[in-house]
Length: 136
Image (tube, rainbow, N blue to C red):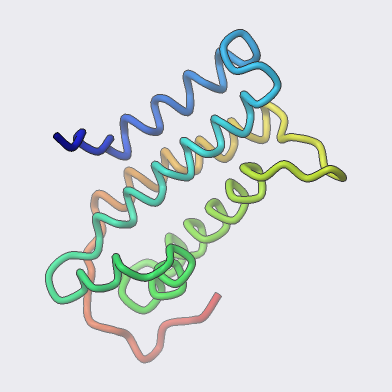
């Protein structure tokens, strides 16, 4: 039997707990685990936008979905914020030998951005493509 998928709110809550617990449960990878959970929350929230005739967009890569957001959202700032936050979380998810892991403050800012985006995405209306939508 398939397990039900976690909601964006549940994932964001898990990201906050992981960031708050730090090394006690996760060891040195606590920051990347929190970033990964927050990124999943953002992806789940944006995925909820693609309904009806736009459902096929959910089959695209998430980066492609982000590129489509300014065209379909009535709020270009929200689309830019979602892309910026997702890119920051993606960078935080990957271990690089030449970069430090994100700090708690950086993670809290990114998680806060995801929280704000969840609220805004919940009240968003998807419309037909706008010819005057600005690109990123």
